[in-house]
Amino acid sequence: MEPKKNPKADVGRNSGLYFVIGLAVTMGLVYTALEWKTYDKTSDYDISMNVDDELDEEVPMTEQIKTPPPPPPPAAPEIIEVVEDEEEVEETVIESTETSQEEEIIEVEDVLVEEEVEDVDVPFAVIEDVPIFPGCESESDKRACFQKMMQKHIGKNFRYPEIAQEMGVQGRVSVMFTIQKDGSIGNVRMRGPDKNLEKEAARIISKLPKMTPGKQRGRAVRVPFSIPITFKLQ
Image 1: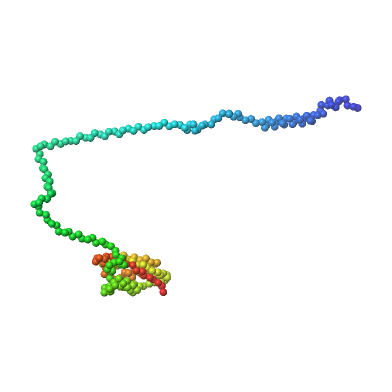
Image 2 (image 1 turned 90 degrees about the vertical axis):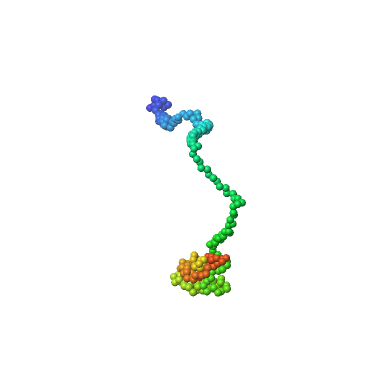
C-alpha cells in the first residue's frame, strides 16, 4: 500500500536541524549579552592648572620708615653761687724756677753705676777659667787634668747593678750636670737604655767632691758639663 502523503510536505522531517540552529543562535545571543561592556563618557576639556602663572606674583616693594630718635632732655640749669666780696681769697704764689747769677752752683760728684751681673751658664769647652778638680791646682793644663780626674773618679766608684747583669742590660748612659758658682754639683740629668743604669750613674756623680768654680771675666759662673758612662758586660 503506498503512502498517501507527499514526503516533501512532512513538517517534522527537518525538526532536528532547526532545533540545533535555534540553540546556536540562542547561545550566541546569551554570550553577546554577557560580554557586552559599557564605558563612562570622558570630558574632552583640560582641567590642569598652570602653576607657573600663579607663582609669578609681583610682591609690592615696601619701604621702612625710620622714625627720628626723640630729642635729648634739656640740661638742668647750672646753679651759680654768688660769693660776697667781703670774703678774703688767698692768692697762690708760684715761685720762679729760673736761676740767677747770684746763686751758687754746686758741683755733683760722678755717680757710680754698678754693672748688672748676668747669671748665665758658660759651657766647659769655651769658659776662660775652667773649674778646678781637687788635685789639679798645680797643673798647667787644668782642663785636661779635670777630664782625667773625672775618668779616675768614675772608675773608682763604678759598680755594675746586679739586676742589670741578671737581665743582660748594657749600654751607654749620658750624664749631664752643672758645676755651680760655689763649686757644688747640681742639676744632674741622665739618659740611658735602662733605669737601673741611670740610677747607678747618678750615684757616681753624687760622690763628686766640691770643686773650685769656673770663672768668666774674673767672675764665678755656672759651668754645664757632660760625660758618658759605658756599662758593658764581660
